[in-house]
Image (tube, each protein chain N blue to C red):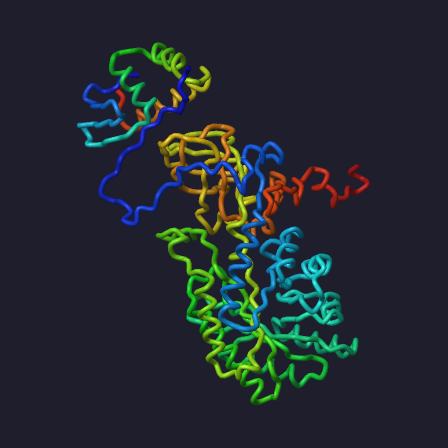
Length: 80
Length: 447
């Protein structure tokens, strides 16, 4: 799962797609995952960091990850 | 120490089509009801659970009575049993001085069992069984006649048992609000009501003591009540002038709205619904100006239900699961549905979370737990991110839900009353399979 190259993101969670003009806001953890995706970190690496940093079980993160990727896909932000 | 987790989510920003009134999303958690934590209520009584605030019930009642009594000298409230006939609730209203307004035989017996004197029970409705009518006559209850068949039946019964019935007729009329509730009672404009009055006065064993109307439910127009009061007053004065029969009371019924938001309403109920004092002003001013001398002003009876209890009722529930629908919308399945929240058919109920939550919200469809496609609590609501097991509170559910609820797929939940000192009391147990099957019988050949 890679973010489209032209997607602009800010530290505080603002997302802008210049191709469509759509903008989005995200909560802090969603913004953090986006930032890690932009650095080229893979899924396993990102999940490890989230598990180290937050009070969350692996199975819950797995479920939420799938849902988050679905949201990004629906928002036309992923390079499929 | 690790940070608090919240599932990742994004929300598309829309520009241009904002609600100019800017109604806000209720983000603040409501963690307790009358001083008792939601967590404790769930651990003691299960989830879902209805919670009623005695303090709020009494506050509502006293405020409504004050609104009328400061404007009119003779006022009596009669608690509408069908709105919520749990005995604990009825007893609170009776303690406050309310009579009982019932619409069926079993409600009539409930009122008697709750210690209400027979002459303080108003018996309404189109379906009164003969045995109930006989009992109501013997107890000197106020019988409100709905149709001519009932009138003739009452004449026959009272002659047979040789006892006088105290009656009123229910009158329907055009108050400028549509649809008019002309299925109940006798019509004013076409002369039916006057015909009924004349027949009652001609009958030896029936005393016409009152006139009754009930123009609708969740009425948002105070002027409709002024029209209704004027027409009832005209009938009462005509009754006195032409038949020398003084009408002792006018019963304006109920129908005053709570501050719930009706489906399809552009603005929230709290901003649009008239206060009870506005209804009181419209009704009492009309009666005072209608031509009664001060010593013959009739008693004003009100049969309010919803406005006195809706905001004293809460439904606590829990999240069963989250899922995403085919069109990308978030959906949350709750452990309560339209089986226990009948009023979700009419209202966009206010729902708040019961634990700390982040400031981010998402648009969600709230589904109930039933295996039925129609089981939707809110078609769209902005809520903080909910997780399985989180609790929510549905507000203003005190009216009709605890009488119109269904035992369907799930059992009906417990009902808890929080008294004026902040102590909780179980006033109706959660139903069990044993209770459900109590009325069933199995034919021998199927055993």
